[in-house]
Length: 337
Ligand code: AHG
Ligand code: MN
Ligand code: MN
Ligand code: MN
Image (tube, rainbow, N blue to C red; front, side, top):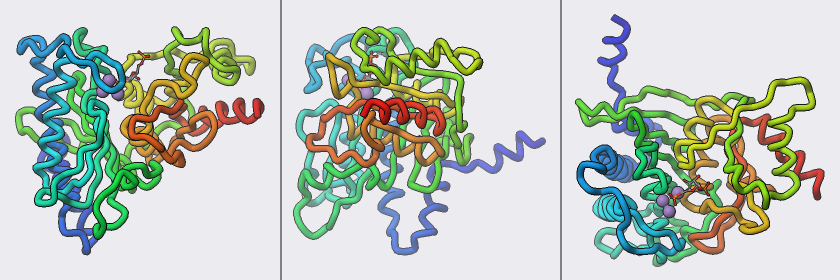
């Protein structure tokens, strides 16, 4: 049967990356080793999330992170797991996590040439109610492996990333990744403990019928955001109104946008001019993926991936998704200039 043939094809994420690697004869498999360690972290968090309620892994850890957020137990556990997995890969030199105020500089014996920025658990507010959450990561190469790594190596624009991805812990565990040549989705087969290629060469629809934003912030929105949302609700060109879908976990909202099309927004507003989402480990990786899938990502002022971050936990407004939908938003901001 076709289904069996499909299964015997068993393109695992490891095989996929190895195939990719053969295109770069110079590479010594470092990226493959790094990715394998990220995959290990995802498998661990996936299993912890699925039994969180049973293993008393829900609720607060009793600390507050640099973001001023009360850390959940799973925030802390996921951060520890990814830190250990990344350091033990021996392929990283600087690690930036949402949960750690300062970057981690890996000591010499364990040092490699990759900088990894990551949100170990995205959507923490949804943990206790069982709604999808995820992990987001981006990977830079250090600028030169002669001098000591410095903060400059991670304060690079998102367009310099060599890879980005997320893992979503939902009804199934899906890892979506790009190494700069398109986007591929892998689903964890728990019986094999392997991520299997289920969504090759993902492309976002050019236009969508969904907008995704926290309408609770409408009071503070600026003109262009308010105008765009108004257009979604009361279209003036005779088209039907769009649907609002907002899960509150960026990974889940972006994953739906990638598959179904439409636009995901976390605008700046009067109260928080830079919005809420963090540039390095939320805005950049998701913008990288959406661009690689044929969509685009805009900050209200510029292409998101062109941003040059000054601080590792810096925030930026973000409008990302279907190419044509984001074009409309860019036009509204251009009018305002
Ligand atoms: P995190 O849980 O990693 O701190 O991220 C939460 C983010 C993101 O997942 C989501 O899009 C956004 O917070 C939702 O914010 P609001 O609740 O303000 O809408
Ligand atoms: Mn958080
Ligand atoms: Mn997050
Ligand atoms: Mn987080």
